[in-house]
Image (cartoon, rainbow, N blue to C red; front, side):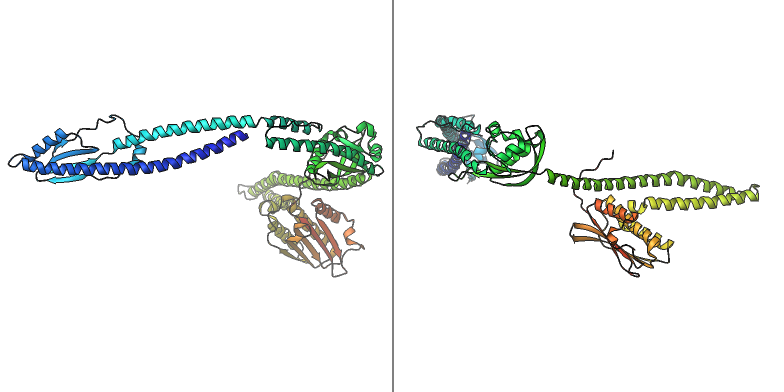
Length: 584
């Protein structure tokens, strides 16, 4: 919204507030005036009626007093702003004053009448033969007040409209120089630092013009000075480039010539955008925005484009170029170092990280395939074995002349089917623990330890579970489960241990943040390698790859006989966002 609009809006609000306050005062005065007027009229009317009543009583001795009084009231008509009604002793209406003919048929709005109407009660004059009721009627006075208020409101409205039009016209007239000022700023924004503003008659705009011209001259001088001072950086081994806030290059040293292949005469005055590949254009604009905010850019690894079209990896540092006189940012000093060798090392690290992600994906796909195979075994083979068992049971239980040999063979079929069923379910549990899908990590660990204990009663297995270990992602849960499963398998195959302790807990204060700590320790003979953590056994390598895929760590400590092996894994619970590796 324009300045003219806001000024007119402020004037409107002020005038409206003044009108509201004035109306409030006027309404209060009108209410007081009407109350005094009606109250005075009612007193006069009551005094008149009391005099008439006294006179009618003397004149009507021996006659009809009520008839005489009614005749008087008819002759008198309406008495000021009052309605007079005469009732006999039985409350029958004998006389009622006629309605007022003053401004007949017109009424003030009800909301206005309710604001100024005086709260005056009826006056009752008791007579020997009846009653006179005097009702104050303020409607005509209220109508007069409304007419006066409308006239005053119309006058205020006309004043308000005239004032706004006058202010709007004056603002438009006196703000005309802003157009030329904005045009000059627009040209300066496009790099025309030789633009100058004319002199203005108004002192405020004249001051702006002088300040603008001084600023344009200072910027023009600064650019010239930048070219002269840039000679200091000519011998630098890093490519040093100076350009203004629009990206126009004003300095280009010898190292920049060697790195990008452009001679200084070819690049000076051109945009630095020429050095940025299309995908880095926005990055260069962001750097310029930071420089405008007096921020520095330190060791930004990016790519730039050489004259031959090749991409070169560089480490970029940039700082604002500040005019020491005006303390204004007038450009950017940029230094770039060739980072080709460093980039090769970085790419090697990224390839390693990609391999870790690929391992994680392979493990995930392997677990998914295990789940599918377990489901197929349960749904297809399990049902078939159950059907065979049911048929064999039915045959062995038949009593319709089936031979003894047939029933015996049927019993054998039932026994073999039961064994196959148990083997299938054991395979299913090895492939995919159902408790992990339905009951969580804690129950799945209890199940695998209980199964281990039942198969190998000679080894005492102790499970220690900490609170809050459930609720992690599925791939983390299956990794913990597989580590415990692999460790228990190694205990039976290699350790000759009599006791194993499995501990799983949540560690909020680890070096990698919130993590799951898995520790499996036995009292067996230990490993026969000098460095247990570097063991090349396939099972240990698989565990290490699983854990490292999540950014975790796996430590293996082997003691002497009786001290056994301790395997400890730390797995971060919250994983950073990473791109999923694609298998091709």
